[in-house]
Length: 117
Image (cartoon, rainbow, N blue to C red; front, side, top):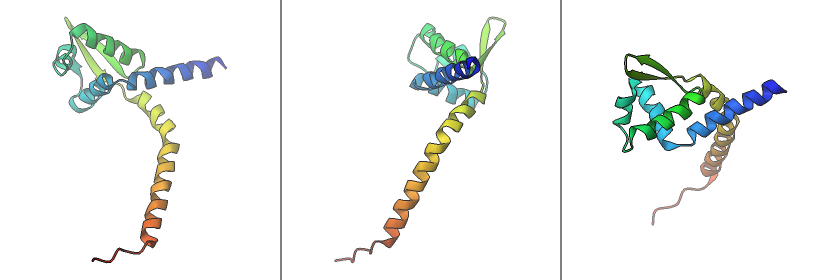
């Protein structure tokens, strides 16, 4: 029971982290550009660096990024493994919508085409 609660708490942290657009953009930047110093990430946002640091802390706590110190720099790296849990959770919904779209396509195929006037 305790393991289930811990897993659910970790999943909740991931979903909470993903709920914010700034944090999703940080993940995209790290996905597309690889590991980056915090200042390079901060240059993409119209906010003060301490505000971005709060977002990075949320992402670290959720396990979505890791931090490595190199001298005075902090370099952030995407840790995508927790996103697999999100994908697992979303999979039944993807199947639901795929089935709905297939049904809509079949309905539209059965409808007569409108005659041009």
